[in-house]
Length: 191
Image (cartoon, rainbow, N blue to C red):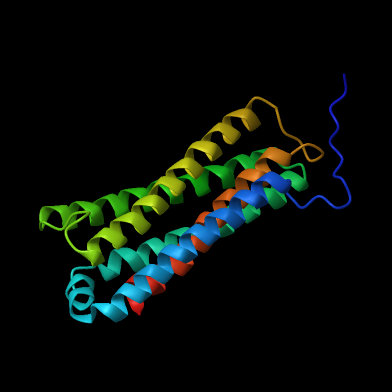
C-alpha cells in the first residue's frame, strides 16, 4: 500500500492537530502571563522582591539558545525539503543540543532558587514563576524527546523530501516552545 504524502490544499503545514495544540498552549500560557501581570500589580513589593532573585544572565542566555534552536529547526525543515538528509540530521542534532542546553541552564536557575529557599507555593511570585517556567520546561523537554525520535527515524530512512510531515509537525511544536518563551521572558524577567 502506498502512503499518501501529498498535502491537502487547505491543510496547514504539520496538520491541523499540531496547530490546535499550539493555539491551546498559547492560550494557556497567555492566561498564565496575564495572571502574573495582574498579581504583580496587586502585590508590587512581593513581586519586586521575587524579581530581584531572578538570574537575568541565565534567562538572557536561554533566550539566545532558544532563538538559535528556532533557526536550526527552520534550517532542518529547509534541508529535508531539499532532500539533504545529512544536513537535516545535523540541524536536528543542533536543535536538540539547544534544547538540552536550555534545560540544563533552567535547571541551574531552578536549583539556585530552591537552594535559597524559594519554592512553589511560597508566595504569589514564586508560585506563578515556577508554574509558568516549570510548565515551559516540560514543553521543551517534550520537544527534545520528539526531535530525538524524529532524528532516529530520519537516520533509519523514514523521511524524504516528499514525506516529512512528522518533522514539520515536530518543528512547529519546537517553534511553539520558542514563542512561549519569547512571551514569558519579558513578562517575568524584564517588565
